[in-house]
Each structure stands twice: as C-alpha cells, then as structure tokens.
Amino acid sequence: NKKLQTEKLELKKYNPFLRRHTVHREIK
Image (tube, rainbow, N blue to C red; front, top):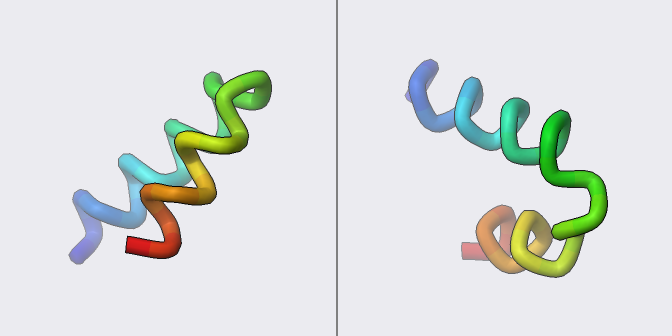
C-alpha cells in the first residue's frame, strides 16, 4: 500500500501535464 501511495504521489508530482493519466490511474 505504501508503494502505491508513493507512486501516486510521484505521478502527481512530476506529471502535472499528464493529469488525465493521473486521474485515470486514481479512479482505477
């Protein structure tokens, strides 16, 4: 679970222009 949270955080951090992908990943 910790790994998943970190991955999500990193995605949000260095993927601001890829918000669509991040949102999709979060919804999953």
